[in-house]
Length: 246
Image 1 (cartoon, rainbow, N blue to C red):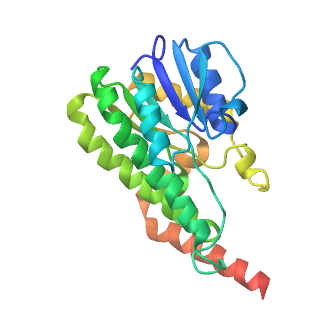
Image 2: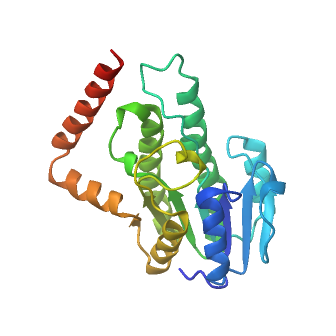
């Protein structure tokens, strides 16, 4: 799938990785980029970038976007939220509900709405920005991990369903990216520009899975050996965290 000349929709295109994707798409020669955001005024103005209002948790706004953006042949589902809360230790399940509504149901809504458009436009590509935690549960952010695991499973299901219409379905996996979402974390982070460039390379090379940084590649290799050892390391991390609170 060639980026040059393509028409692309990027959800969450106003900041962070979404903004980096929009810029990378411009540099790669995309003909038009719909930069979707809850507030389209927050999208930085740029040539060939068309801001659109879109909250992926709103069925009416998703339907409106699909009706308006009928020339799309690459969809990048980038919008997501993270609360960094444990499954049982959080005061309520509201953060978990919000994460699932955005990261899973929002992505599902976009896939359903734009699959016919991609088919009409020759197949194209559908890209879901997942996470390295799609593959395992980090206990301090367990609810986010659960939503990303659901989105990972969804990505595989969508791939099965859209293969016959010629749509490339891409899952992107990365560790922490240096955006507002991770501003409070001290862990090593990848630049959004580097991740965006890797994503575009993956689309052009026809890769169904894009391991976008060293963290994703290392975790993938470790889990392929024996995921029980990885889960044990996560259990140890959780136990140590709880002891430090005690």
